[in-house]
Image 1: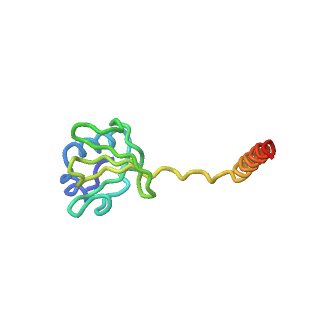
Image 2 (image 1 turned 60 degrees about the vertical axis):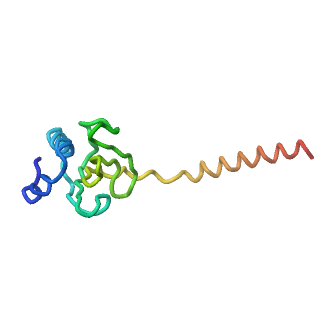
Image 3 (image 1 turned 90 degrees about the vertical axis):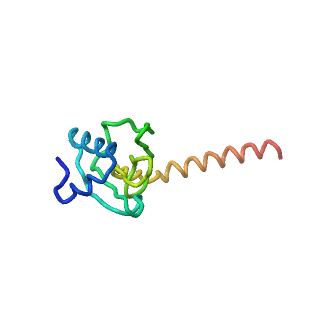
Length: 123
């Protein structure tokens, strides 16, 4: 996949380090889910969201590239430039499974039994 024609001019505004990241990701088979303006990018900036997590760069801060681990409903990781005007976003993480209420109740009951047994020793 390549940059869609309607977003080429917009993509050219991204800092070189982010353009290189996106180009490497597209070559590795990742795809662009959306281009946008607004959160997390400030006015005058932009973001690009990928369909999969980044695999061509380490997930850590580097000299010209910052990385932030997030867990928002809209995205997870953020790669950004030093000015934080342009962002390459990873898709949101899958939702966590619901808690096992039976296990929670069993743990609470076991804790209560232990507490009651300790109390009996003092009375």
